[in-house]
Length: 236
Image 1 (cartoon, rainbow, N blue to C red):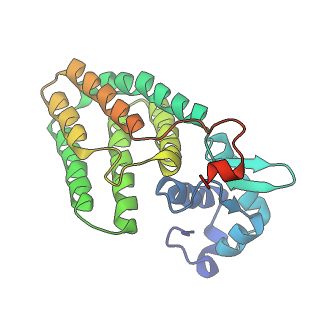
Image 2: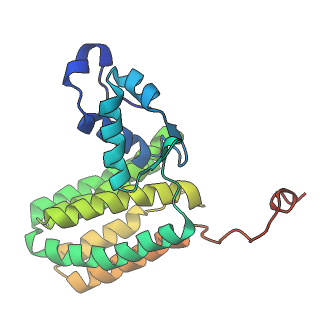
């Protein structure tokens, strides 16, 4: 688990629940913490050299976002979204992201297009690298594109909703993703930017919906067979 490049011994008095929450959140979004991972208050507290009270506050904040499940008498765990939750997340993105594009479009000028294209260039660079760290960074960069568009909307509430949806999408992709390539293709991002640059908002919205469809299509959301025993599940 990352401590966000903080040295606990030197920075303990400066670390608060928000910083702990941010570090854990980043690790979840970047898929360095797998769904179902136990987040012991003692272990997290020792990593940051802080009290369990601060850790508990950070974990509670993450539970409000749906990224952590806090279970009575068991502790906290990285959320393990169900198939139904996964489907709801992408259904919500289909409703929200076209709205964000329409809100952002009037504010998008040359500077904003340049910013988005720089994000696309970073996606391409990471796509050409190998290894798990590069793959995690590529996934984060893909999410950053959606968050950048949300930020350009100027609507803080929409941006907050997208923060949660992108984070929860990362959990879903970690659990159900099938493809070895980016599940949030930079070529589709480029087409969306091209449409925004041309002020063709309707095309940008249609492309975004297709893009979300493609992300979800790469997931294996088939429910497990009811009543399957271990032998059947392992196909033995």
